[in-house]
Length: 140
Image 1 (tube, one colour):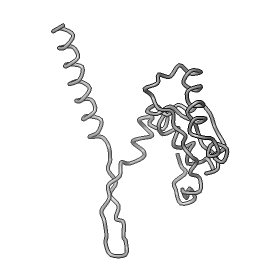
Image 2 (spheres, one colour):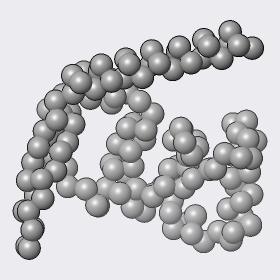
Image 3 (cartoon, one colour):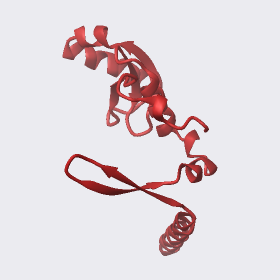
Image 4 (spheres, helix red, strand yellow):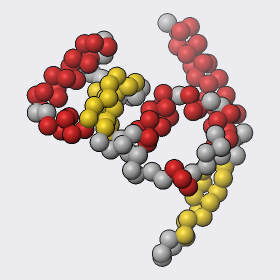
């Protein structure tokens, strides 16, 4: 038991030192946001670092890219935490369902994919109308 705890502790220390070493390579970009009554200095992580590390292939960024491209009349049914997409629904039809019908649907998704009851099933509406991609950098 002591050997297992020691191994876990050493693994945690090595992981933390590796994360700190990699974060020191991150170039922070500072921008100023000018508002009506104030100016704020904002720091961002340089996106080139994120792409070089492969963050664009992680489940969360992939999920949010899909949500940002999805029109607001649609929604993705997904597993909380990991954001695994299991279905796509018309939001108008989803909103017509009773709470009991929504619960039944989510329970059927849990059964189909073997998801425990303790894990939430989320319905996330598309946000394409919210984001302005024309102003964004599309070089990546």
